[in-house]
Amino acid sequence: MKSDKIFVYTDGGARGNPGPAAIGIMLYDEKKQLLLEHKECIGTATNNVAEYKALIKALELAAGFSQNELCCFLDSELVVMQLKGRYKVKTPHIYTLYSDLKQREKMFKKVVYNHRRRTDLFISRCDALVNDALDGGRERNNK
Image (cartoon, rainbow, N blue to C red; front, side, top):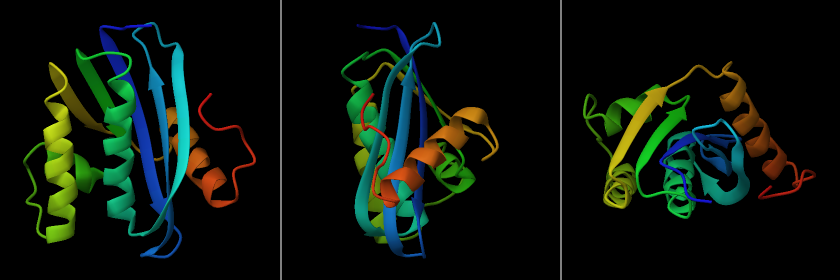
């Protein structure tokens, strides 16, 4: 199903910093219908690396539903501010992820990044997906 606008919710987390890390993603269409849930362990990483990898994977998944507009929501203020150009990306390994993400943005007509608190219902669900992946994935992946 193609959609004009996709709402993307992501979270990335690590147990330890760095430590075992995972990502959680939810995609919704403009009618607020769930298109996809995804969770995945990504190996050892920092929280910031996990947040970037969650967004990169989300853009990859969203491209299957739309190349129009993406509204992305995540709880990392640092990542949102870096992507909006308000904070500098200071470390080379994060800059590599930042550049990859900026390249993937070109698949879409418009990509907007928004900061949400961890208590946001959708962000909380993404956090639960992260923890479930780290705990061995009791829930079904890729609904």
